[in-house]
Length: 122
Image 1 (cartoon, helix red, strand yellow):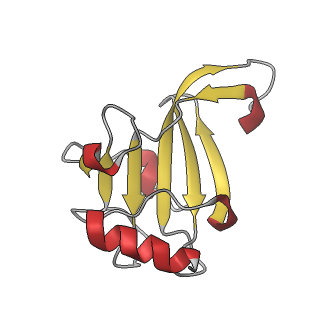
Image 2: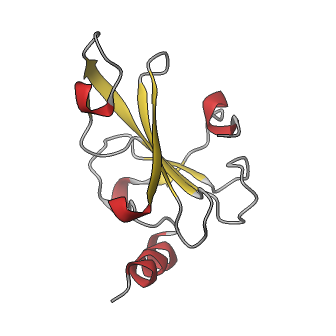
């Protein structure tokens, strides 16, 4: 089965697709101030429309490469640009997995303040 179809089916069942496979990975960002490691994906289009953020557990001070950081196994935050407008500012586009277990049952819509770095136009 095509990965895009699996992605869409996940979205229909949980309102948030599971984290996309690496073949859709476009870029990675490290925000040491926020303590988050971001992964940006382009799924269902050619622009970034899905993002995750994992908590940074430790980081090697010599380099800021993704290989030199220890991050949580599963994301803490998930974003999905469902309407395709390029921003994650609409209700229902940001989710949180407070326990970082990676199972869809723990992922809930995020109702706190939006993270400023998310809508910075990367």
